[in-house]
Length: 235
Image 1 (cartoon, helix red, strand yellow):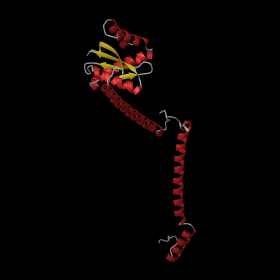
Image 2: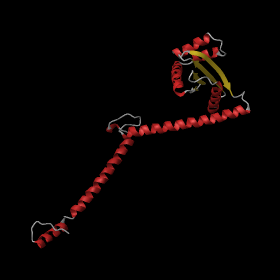
Image 3: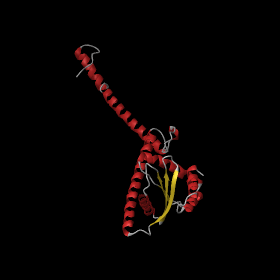
Image 4: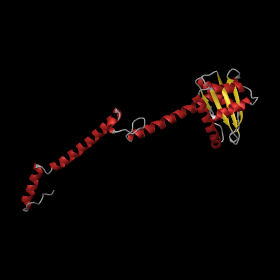
């Protein structure tokens, strides 16, 4: 059990917080990798609160539906905003209910309070539901923008690695082990270089042709006319 989650369970055991048993059971029943990720996220959130001056939520799905908020003095608790965001996540994911976990820490990084609330859309009025749908639409747009930026950054990174002689995973590989796509690129570059060399050779041959048979005849005629052997004919 990570120290951060053990601290939460110990605090719940000594408190009268509503839903304390459900929150403790949720943490105890979670897989080991989930506990490790959650503990790491708590530590990251405490550092982010100091830098951002606000809390950034963490939402998970796939049977562990939960939205986590980590509050601290640089980012005091905003219960209504947390609930609104959690409902927006529910609408985006097509869920009917979701856990909202809120953890409050002091300046020393010690847990001060832990809250669990089960949220659903059934108890919402028309106005609240409309607000939740607006927040869900805004959340979808932000997520889509992040995905596009992430995809563009990944594509640029792969392009740089491939151009430097690496493969699509970013690993540098010898020329004989490169993929067919890279071999095709190298082949096209070699063909272009060959065409360039052929064009240069053709120009050189044309220039040399001027000193071929006709060129030599003009030079000889010029020498005869000038009476000086070896003097080239100049036009």
